[in-house]
Each structure stands twice: as C-alpha cells, then as structure tokens.
Length: 269
Image 1 (cartoon, one colour):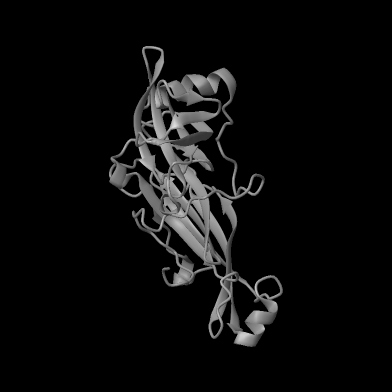
Image 2: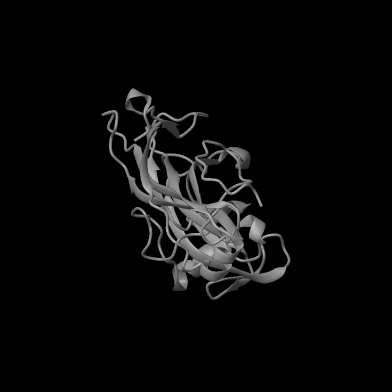
C-alpha cells in the first residue's frame, strides 16, 4: 500500500487511478451519464459483445473469457471529432480490484450502426460531464473514489477519448482519507473534496475549474485508543479548507486539458 498521505497529483498515470464512483446522489457536480435499458441498451451492447448480449450486459468478458460484464451508464457526445457521433459506456465486471473492477468502451456510429472503437480496462466513466473544446469536440471531466485497507481516496480527472490509451487520462486532484485505517502510533488524516465549481476564471468564455478541499490531521493514537475507538468513535480532527484553481485549455492539442492557476500572492487559499 502506498504511503498514506494527502496528495495533489498533476500527472498522467493510471497506476494511482482511483475511480470507483461515489454513491448515487453524492456527486460533486452535475453529470451527463444516462441510464441505458431495454432496446437501446441491447443495440449498444450488440456492438460491444456481438452474439453474447444478455439483459443489462454481456455473458463474455472483454478479453474473451466467460463472466458477466454489466453496462452501468453511457454518455453520448462528439469525442473523436466535431462531426462524430460517439457514446462511451461505463462497464463493470470481469476486471480485478487493481483495474477498478471494470472499464469503458467507446462506440461510434457509422452508416447508422454502432461500432466498437476500443475498450480500456480500469477507465471508469460512470460519473462524468462533457466539456466542449474550441474545435467543438468534447472531453470528459470525471469524479471517482476508491476504498482499500481503510483508506478512502477521492479523485477528479479529465479524459480525452480521442487520444491513444496512454495519453487519455489526466489526473487533477487526489485526496486520501486514512481515518478508517486504524494505525496506532501515527497521525490519521481526514480529507475530502468539498465542492467542485466551473467558473470562467480568465474571462475566455470557457468553463474553468475550482476545487475546495477539507483536510485535517489527528494526534497519534495509542494501541489502546485504536482498539477502543477505531474506526467509528475516533475523535475527528479540525479540518481546514484549501482551494485549488485550474484553467481549462480550450485549444488543447497534446497539452494538458487543465493548467494549475497559481494562487494569488503565492498563498494557497
């Protein structure tokens, strides 16, 4: 398990991708995900797993072996080009914990039929919203969370579905709450993303990003205190708000989709 510290990552790496979505109703921002059922789901799944469609999913995994591969949601948009008709499907099942128990499939419509372009293991798109680029393509801004060994990680990340697999994902913010880890002799950390907003920070007509975080650290607990109080009755630390701002790169071409905006006077709010 990686070191349990609160971190802000500006990287392009899948290894620390935290993307199991928060429970319904707890989304930090309005999403574009749609529930897909009935004939519409069957039409899309026929392009995902021909001859293996079952209700709500597939009876074969993306790598060809048996197992149930379920459809969670979809987002329709112009992801590969301004004139393209695409839909990205968030799928669950068939993948291990290390790959977030699922992945995403990108479809495109050609001659009136949906065709599968790619599947990416570990890429979770079930809590996302579309953001338009200057060239009228669209990219995704997503939220995810992940629980393991008493640590709850929340992340915000962007995805450009037109790029090669190794370049699609840009992680913007990751916070790790270790209050459930129950370590003796070490301070524990309460951390969560409090608010996500999309103001136009530089007056260029494009939505930028403002993220408010709350973090705080406990004292070091003894073995006796951990045994008695952890996890539900541990004293909660006082938290402090931190605000991060990112400028959206609307003319994005092989550049990061969001660029960190330096805080005023060099002091992080």
